[in-house]
Structure formats: structure tokens, C-alpha cells
Amino acid sequence: MHSELDAYDRRILALLQEDASLSSAQIAEQIGLSQSPCWRRIQRMKDEGVIRAQVTLLDRKKIGLNTQIFAEVKLNAHGRSNFTEFTEAIRGFPEVLECYVLMGAVDFLLRIVTADIEAYERFFFEKLSMVPGIQEVNSIVALSEIKSTTSLPV
Picture 1 (cartoon, rainbow, N blue to C red):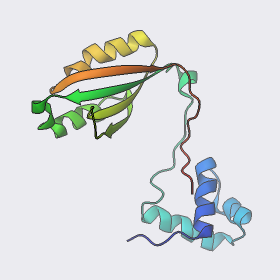
Picture 2 (cartoon, one colour):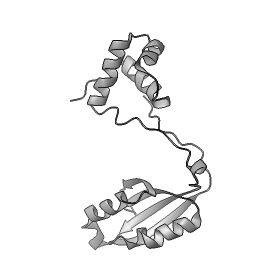
Picture 3 (cartoon, rainbow, N blue to C red):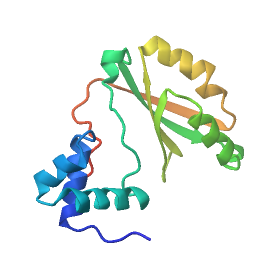
């Protein structure tokens, strides 16, 4: 069961989204609470799953992942019955950062990162196109990034 988030909880979440390395004492000082209640609030939100994980975000270009592709995937009629097989295959590809089930003309939207177009071509032919049930893949190359954030509007 999730409790309702109050103003303190939302301020804690906003701060943690910007810098997850902040200590509970630093957060408490910034929001006007003492350390113990602040720590308890953070623990409660972790226990309830509001805070799913605390991670380090990398700059993909600085580690050589210069190409970002959005792929629209359409399954054939037989492929739709093997939804689980498709999703498990996609979960196994580290190049796929995100996968969404869609309503409409296509079944899935994938966000894929690779070093370059040649690396995407290898990924496409050696991995993605080998997944059973795929009827069509429409790949869209992102030229530049206007906005990218992990912060939710709390």
C-alpha cells in the first residue's frame, strides 16, 4: 500500500532526482526537517517502491555510444501470440535501453544505442531481425538530442 506523498516527500524526491548521492542530513537541511524524520521518509519511499533505484547516469557519447535509434516494431499475427518470447529476447539485448508496447499501427517502440550506424546495422541483422515473429522494423535515427531527463515532475 502506498501512502500519499506530502510536500516534504516531493521535495525529497526532487532533490534525489537531481543528486542521489546527497545524504539524508544534507536533504534534511535543504528541506527544513531534522535528519531522522527525513531518513525515515526516504526509507518508507524505498520500501513502497516510490524510489526504485539509485543509479549513476552516464554520458553515452563519452563512452562511445554516439548513435541513438528509435525502432518501431510490428509483429506478424503469429508473433503476437509469442509476446513473451519477443519481450524476453528484447530484454536480453543491452543495446535496447527502452521498450514500450504501443497501441496503433506498430506494436513496440524501442530506444537503441550503438557506437555508430555500422554497429546498429550489425545489431539489426545479427540480433533484432532474428527475433521470431517480427513482420516489420522501421528504424529512425536521432540526429540530435533536444531534451533528455530522468527527473519526473514531482
